[in-house]
Image (cartoon, rainbow, N blue to C red):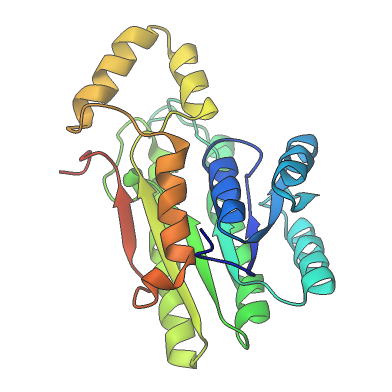
Length: 250
């Protein structure tokens, strides 16, 4: 208990899945969490549960980000932890069949959000310090043939994180930036994707076969990585990739 006591965190895409699990764990360890999501009701409900603040945030909108960061600054005076978790899956979208509009939306929600959030967080954190944690994917390291836009977006998050980390270090800012690369996690998005794809049983069997550990992860498995990178336990890590994938990338 108390690994991040007294800190202020902002988590995007936090009404469900990895974002919700991360918000709950950070709060349990002493953090005041600003829970943000395009699903305002979900964000407020979770914030009430964990004793934080719930805000509407379309993570791909610069105007929404500016409002959220100003709210954090006015209410708390600082930001110690940013978890750029908001993202969107593109469904089945190989390079032949994925539309340009789908591609642009995936990049907006996954990459633009990480860029805007990191940019504004650096400005707020550069005097007092902080940890930026960007949720990429194992497909930011190992491409998926059926996910052209998603692979491109998560790969961009991976290298954007390294650029932020290096810039902050070279600028003398006490800010660390790291990325997390989950394997397939049993979130609402994954379950809905499997249902849309048809034979859930066959798809689950294929996914399990790709994870040598023998099971798929839960959102809480990734939240523990978020807590580690948010805490001083990871004080010597910046620009790193925390792979939590059940052996998918082996």
